[in-house]
Image (tube, rainbow, N blue to C red; front, side):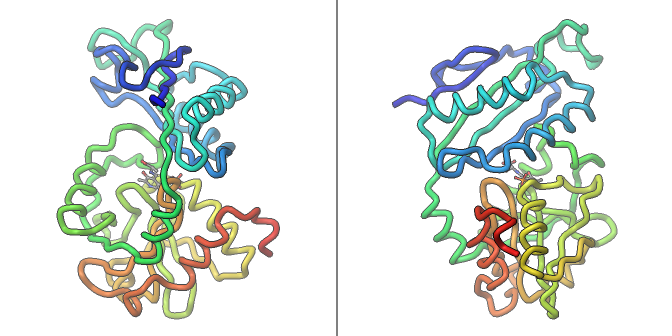
Length: 286
Ligand code: PDD
């Protein structure tokens, strides 16, 4: 079965789907996106992702081409047409196609909406979590609004590639003040010696992950002490546990940072415990 992509009202064969070379995201990375997990055929935390999409659009003064109800319908249609039961959906909205000028195009220019879906193997994800990943730290050279989920991801791409070349699965980005903000494509967490769960506050220097928000709710329901504050590289090296979170990775333990072993060098109980209950309704965890 060939993959199907949604492009501006049409369902097309993925390989033949496309937008104009004048698309503003192609020219200026003038667009926003979301990645939503498909769990057992359903769009997990869909409301949170759509709220964040609306926020990103408002921050960039970008019009969404359809309302939430229509968008939900198309998202389901793309999942169904690609027969995805476990995987993720990718949604991108750009400021449309127009002659290359930095100014916004004329008000009537329609935004471009592309939605694709891809399956993933949940068993492989769990196996990776049991092993844990390595992380390297790098300077955070992004613009000052990473809280907006734009497709402008060049610093993230460079960091991720550098991590891969170092044999690591993620790069943790360090601000000029020496504090870690987040990962190149995930949020960053540590567990300190007292067992407190620590993650950067959701200010303008990180993307407020939908996975992060759910994990905070789960942790609080399980009476784990949670502290939303920035932490340093030195604190990370001394942490009992470390992990990353995101819609594609869920909770992934970090066992080494910059070559130094975290805790005993094995995935920690907090990270694995949070991963194990991640898809359970938060209300039932208390
Ligand atoms: N990345 N921080 C950054 C920089 C991210 O790119 C992501 C997600 C997150 C986690 O957000 P969420 O929990 O809502 O997925 C944090 C997506 C998955 C990506 O770019 O592929």
